[in-house]
Length: 170
Image 1 (cartoon, one colour):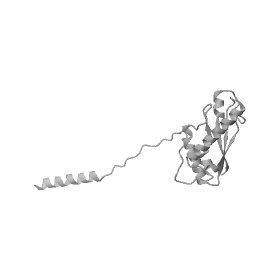
Image 2 (image 1 turned 90 degrees about the vertical axis):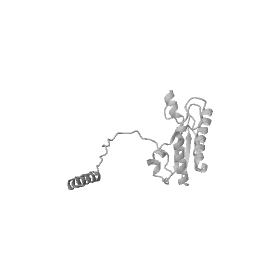
Image 3 (image 1 turned 120 degrees about the vertical axis):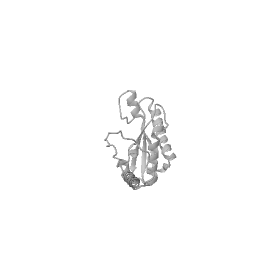
Image 4 (image 1 turned 45 degrees about the horizontal axis):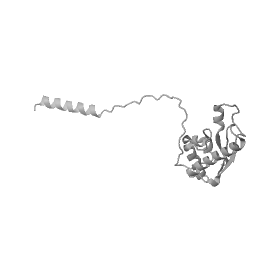
């Protein structure tokens, strides 16, 4: 190999080495802030709940369980909340809750009192199935006596078919 070829080969190798050693810095696309609807997250099972979590944790803030017409079983969309409240009771053995059952205005007074008690017991069973202690819960049945809505239409009746979770000792 002659000198010119060697010089060209060396120059070519140096250029290739320099080109390969350069790192191209990739710039990520700018993030635009878009408002999102709040999403209920399942309970964080890693930490221990404290009383302050009742107001700050998205799952624990949900303290109303709604029911379908003439039904006393907890709907599937409320199962995550039941797990959160059960975990809170496990983490805070001194805490207590009252489950207040309610019904809409349809049906007799006696029927609605019995139905709202069954609804309260259904929420209690769901919390106990997730590990909550039954000794920390009590059920109160109000029937149709404490409506949140007084109109006579389906939207109003749906809001009155509920169990409210009230922490009496946090």
